[in-house]
Image 1 (cartoon, rainbow, N blue to C red):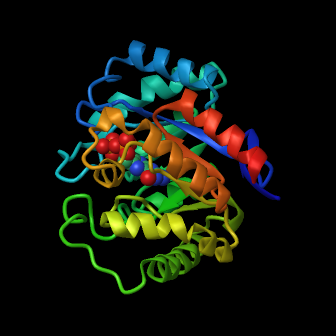
Image 2 (cartoon, rainbow, N blue to C red):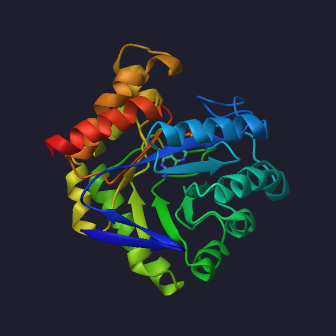
Length: 276
Ligand code: HH2
């Protein structure tokens, strides 16, 4: 059992899988862009995800898909903070999906208890300090390149070994920046600078990341490698493919699954937990 504490609570990993519902308050996210940009709709959707089994809601105000438009910190804050404040007031556990320290600080003040940083603290030099000061739990994700460049022919020797090496360095850097090791959750970053075969390899060998001694999060939900693997399924037709990846990831040791289709994936997680 591994305990990861955040202000006011903790995750107890090892007993069951935590379901993280995605809430993109953006006009341009790859699967739900524009759907939740209105704060009232975003709140209704977040509450519905919690009713359907989400343990926490991951609120993001900037799309990370390739070629997404960069968003200024003030705009990102304007999108996410009102939603986080309301969710926190309703005692809903919130993570903030951002790589900007100013946005993270504003989100923590509004009540977010977890940082989800797809740049693993490398996007903004002030980020580690912001997370350490707030005492939040942090999800650190692997990405090769930047969202702008990551899908230009990503190449690896051994993709799993390379990501494990990256995590070892990130853990050292986070620790020297004042973030306690036992606050950290690692995520191999499905789709971030990876070809479909890299994503499949990571999922097949997910158990190897256990050697790092930290809980694992994984985000496969509706991603394009699922569409490609199934002969060109569109983004709204990848639920079953997502379910297969969620089940496989849990059987190989995933602790947190980041998903859009919370009702379906909570069932998959509960059922797979019983089979693990
Ligand atoms: N994937 C996305 C965004 N954030 N965070 C973690 N920890 N792991 C992931 O795999 C991950 C993530 C991309 O998905 P989405 O938020 O739906 O799309 P967009 O970045 O276009 O908003």
